[in-house]
Image 1 (cartoon, helix red, strand yellow):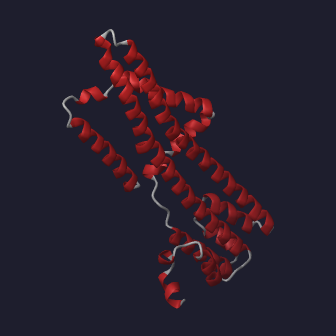
Image 2: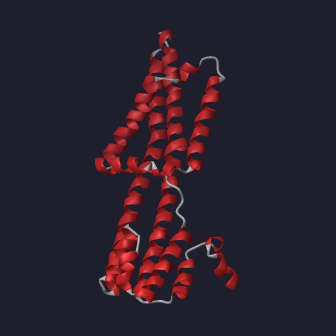
Image 3: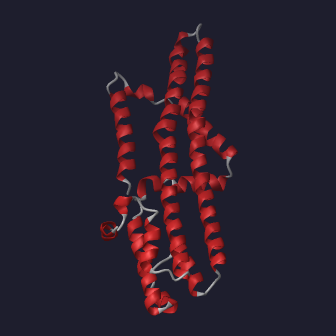
Length: 255
């Protein structure tokens, strides 16, 4: 679990709750009409803007902002270098029997074992990288759209409330509810946008960059193994993707 994201949301909600609770009547901040205008409007606009399956996928991956930890790139480099050493020592067929990998890296190594052409391996893995990036961008775009539309529907609620407010001038009993709709719609839109949608979109962008970096390392590692690079040279090449503090300490001291 990403404790930073979880604690951030928890702190934001807690601060709002404390601020509301310090007032004379916290229940005045719960307004069904404002909820319908803002939340209902955002959901409707999002479903109009994007295909339903994309919206469903975006909300399913939103959990990655809270429950996915940053990957350990140093461990991945060490794993690829170990596979390279095994391939040089025992041959590619024996490496296949011993390798404990899956997903993107397994696909690349399988093509190496099958003696596919280097250009073919690069083309297949690069195409999968682009496809992964496109899927990630769709999810980020949806949450950025929510962040854009939530304050807008907050303004819609405000305008509706203003119309009702002016219409209630001769009937004072309706002024309070119209004023609540005017102000709370703006509040709801701002909270949805700035406490939820924008941070989630930003965290998904960060997670996407981390995953793409991992896959770039895997791609270079697979091509290095296919080219029968010396493990030390391959490790130096893969370490170029890492920050200096993440690199193998022994390699840093030798350099």
